[in-house]
Length: 389
Image 1 (tube, rainbow, N blue to C red):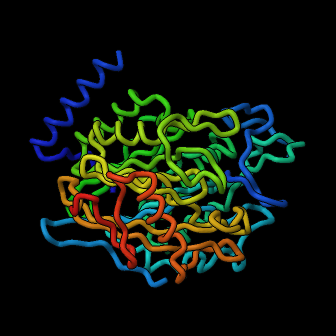
Image 2 (cartoon, helix red, strand yellow):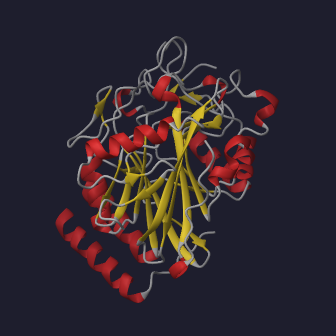
């Protein structure tokens, strides 16, 4: 699915101009009991760097054939289990069955919040850590992602290096074995062909194993380059503080456990200025509002999608997630969208939420946090821009 073909000539010129301008200017959620929470590893400091250790009904695809629009769907955090002892029943078979129909789109993306690897003997948690958690699922679990319909998985998050560089590389190999694309490594731009439309996906976080969320000028160069390589540019970004109280989006830098988790508004706007057509956020472990900026949608957080083996707390809002679907024209312009509510059941599997709790929360937050620019969502989850587009 990789491709290096460029945008149409008129967009290529714009992308190169943006890149030149930038170069000149530049010179896990709180949880209770024994449920895992993300903490910096002992010895890993604020970076979470690895250290040696011992031993409702889906609303349907937001497709629009007018102008050759393509549909894209995306989810928040995905953990299928935590080897060796906290894995789902039946080897994870049917893990995504309840939500497979909701995911369907021309391009399906997810944030993979764990390595798919054997135990590499290197992890971010010290041997005596009590509030540090590292996740991994067996490499063959990549098949469950394929069977669910996923096409591209983001590795730019705080768990990407839970088992060190070897675990990261093993994850890439596991995904590739099942014909799945990955993105998120430094300077990595993943380009896929979607019904003749080239879509570039790049992942960002505040960690050294990914494109930088904090260095906005450098991030803009990545997006500007992506804009010269594809017709549509999607940014996957792990940003913001974590926990049940982190649903609101406000201007300014967000910190968590001493880490700089970026300035979500500043970053997202800058990426659209550089050429991005869609921003898909995750990281806070709760849903956040959505807004339109220059006609492009920003989903600040899609919450928790899956926490197999009870790896993520599903209490209250921590258990709510959803599937974002958008239709974009070949030039990246908005052509429609929807949000379908999901929740993590008692086993941590993603399940359709017929009570639409997530939709209600996203609708409320979009209006309250972005009174003039917030996305408008109706009772069926249809997304519209505040200007009626």
